[in-house]
Length: 401
Image (cartoon, rainbow, N blue to C red; front, top):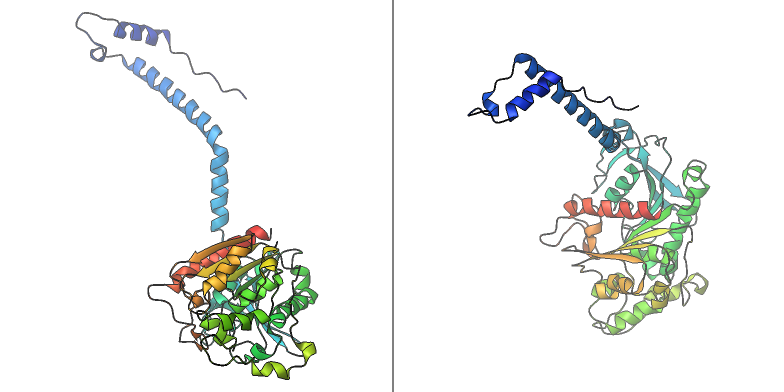
């Protein structure tokens, strides 16, 4: 519909304007006082022009304004809020795998004291009705715990993911017997694949997990695990060879119970000879799981990977390295991955120590690698985790669309 034209200015008003604007002796325009009916006519005309101008501006701007309003409303709507529920799953087998399942729920979560951890969850809450965005598997470091990355797990769950954080049998806070089993490098990734098998076969979870939207997150030995699942291949012999040839990676050599260059003697791990050859890792460990479409590796253990297999990785990789890692010397591990994985999106966290990627516990966590609750001077782990959670979530959102 066409806009109505402004009313014409009356002839009396036009005549007054001409007289006022023409020079007339010493008179000026401001000195000529118009009659009341002229002032009324002027105000009516100006008001109409302003109204038409505002209406035109609104027609031009209303689309983006309405879009912004709708976006703000969606952000602020309570119905859009999700929290993290928590359940425990045990995957049966010769070595049962305990799994902490975090998932989206509409039930408000609260801080739950669980040993040294304080996850914000609702145990046993119903699952949100909205479709899952995907499945994320979390692999902890050597001697770790399924709740060791609870902050990242709850963030991903609140964002719509099902998160499965497993406790690795034979390499957790209670039991590290797998270290000298001779099958460490193959078994760790296979444990993750077994959890994935169980969830996809589950009548409850299998139908909910979107096809092609499966990712994995790992820290330290868990970083090794997810890179192996992405296609990196390990040569177990490289571990002992590395420790015999260098003296500046004592954390790795100590945790792997391997003799280092600074130690006398070069004996192989004692327990390896007691394991049947059929159950030991071969000369090259290849345990890729093609169902996993994106991985996040945080301060990964990586010296055992072959350079060629790292270069061949095509799965999207987000790599995070700690600047002040005193457990795994970066040039042999994180930096080695960054230099050889072409698809890796790598970054170094300023001031961070090796344990910066774990949730902050409420009391000291003694381990063979040191106190997992301690931080380098000047580094605020809790503050950093807001950035960590955003970066991991955004990366997985992009790659698992």
